[in-house]
Length: 376
Ligand code: GLA
Picture (tube, rainbow, N blue to C red):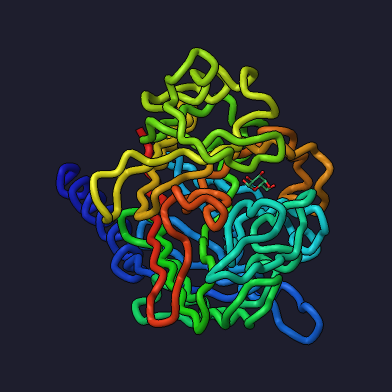
């Protein structure tokens, strides 16, 4: 009798446990929240969730990635990108491109000018005498049209940039598809077309800190860059045109991340911190591993795959704790996070030896980058 009631109890426990699971089969979903207005345009935050609970939030303003929620090795959720508590945060003048889509040309163009088919173009300069990240109002500060794609795991963002915008020639239509996969990857597919020859170089400017708020800097993160070469820069961060081996002289040793290395190990040897373009060791034209990032305490591990030839590793050098409306009021101090911006090399329009960045009418610019999250 005793044994019988014990069995009934076990059966009841199992019945209770399995019931809710049957009702809430995890699936992909996209939710929307209104976070304010810019002039008369509604600003919306879209959140894609995958079956294992990873979440990525994206704004129509700047195509900004505002949150990436991933689990640590104990199964706890954490947000691994820097950002703001409100739209006012994104709109502050000193917002250092948190999470945005960068275009028409990521990184710097020297003295804000270049010559194409015999004509000199003058760009808006916004970084000393150089043009940075598309100019005064780049793709990071415009409103993108957002469409949910079938399957509830992708959002398609479109922006039409006008001929002459920020000094660039040609009407450009840029399309970016953000997808969250069941393998915990944030996949970004970029496309662009133009009606006049123009430089195009698009990237994503997420600031990662895999500790999800536990560590105030990324100096304890371990980085690997699959790159034996980098593009040395002058004092205004413009490539000097030469491609240097990461082990060329003892002086460039801090640039060697071919084996996973603590970011803090050699950072003091690099004036101002890391803010350079590494030339990826590529085999072909497809999606290849470019970088890995590991935070031991949380166990979070991120792999970056790309079709691009370069990656800008920026160690958050200009963060100084003064940004307002940050998530939870956090002080984002120097090196609070790092960016891994997959791209063509800075200032390519003025460096004929660098891979071509000129998009012509009839051609399509394409670029895919995947940020894959796991734990180990
Ligand atoms: C890029 C640049 C840096 C800096 C940041 C934004 O990574 O290379 O010099 O401008 O963007 O603050």
